[in-house]
Amino acid sequence: MLARECLEEFKVECDLRRLSTRTTKGYYNNTALFLNYLEKHESVTILESIRPQHIKKYLQYLLNRKLSPTYINGILKCLRAYFKYADGEGYLDCNPAKKVSWQREGKVLIETFTDDEVLSLLNAFSGSDYLSIRNKLILAIAFDTGARNTEICSITEADIRDNVILIHGKGNKERHVPLTPYLKKLLAKYSRVKEHYFDDKNVKYPNLLLSRTGKPLTKEAMEHVFRQAAENANVRESIRCSPHTARHYYAQTNLRNGLDVYSLSRLLGHENINITKRYLQSLQDSSIVEMAVKTSPLRNLRI
Image (spheres, one colour):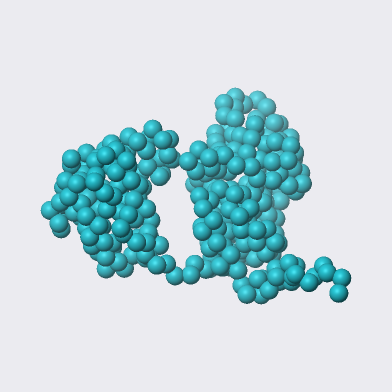
C-alpha cells in the first residue's frame, strides 16, 4: 500500500473522530512532509517498507536544521498518530514509530505576568460602553478560568451556570471551571449592557462574547483585545500579552495558592499531568518554599 494512500485514509479517520481542524491539519501536513522526505532521500513510497530507522533519520534531519527538541517531538506525535492508525487497520506487521524515542527536552521555564501587571491590564478598559465592558470581561475570563483563546470565543450564554462555566475543549471534551464572585459581577454588568446594545439588532448567535456587529469573536479579535490592553498597562516588553500568557498566569498562580497539580490539570483540560508539570517547574524556588510552609507536616500539630 502506498504511504500517501494511507495518509488520505488517516485524514478521513481524523474527520470521523471530529478532531479539531487545527489538529487534523497538523497531523496531515507534518506526515506529508515526512513522506516527501522519504521519497526524496530514501526512495521509499510503500507503507510497509518504512522502518524505525527512516523515522530516526528524519528526526536527525530536523535537528540538523536547528529545530528545537520540543518542535521535533510535536512532529513525532503526528507520525505516531499516523502509524497507530495504519497499524490498527492491519496495514503493518509492526508499528515503526513505537521504536522511536522522544527527544529530550530542556527544562521549560514559562514566564508570565506579575500580579501588578494583571491588575493594570484589568483596569485598561474603564469605560461604560459595550466594547469596554466586553473587553474587560474577556480579560477577566482568561485570567480567572485559564481557558484557551478558542474556548473563550465558543462560550455561549447557556454555558454560564450558577457556579460554573462549561468549557468546550480540545477533542470535543467538556470541563467545568469555577464561576467566581468577581466574574459573576462582571457578567451581570455585561449582560445588562449587551442586552441594551443589541436591543434593536438581529443577533443570530448564542455566543456570550460578540463583536460590535453581533458576530462571534475570532481568535484574532481576542489577541487584538490583549494588545490594546497592553498599550495602556505597564507590561514588560519581554512578556507577550496574549490569552495564552493569561493561561500561564492562571496555572502558576493556582499552584502558588496551593492547588494540586492533578486538579489544575483537569481545570486546564490537559491530556495528561506531564503537560501541567511544566508550570510547576517554572515556579521560582521562593514560591515553592512559600507553598511548603503552608503544607508543613508539623504546622497544625500541637507541639
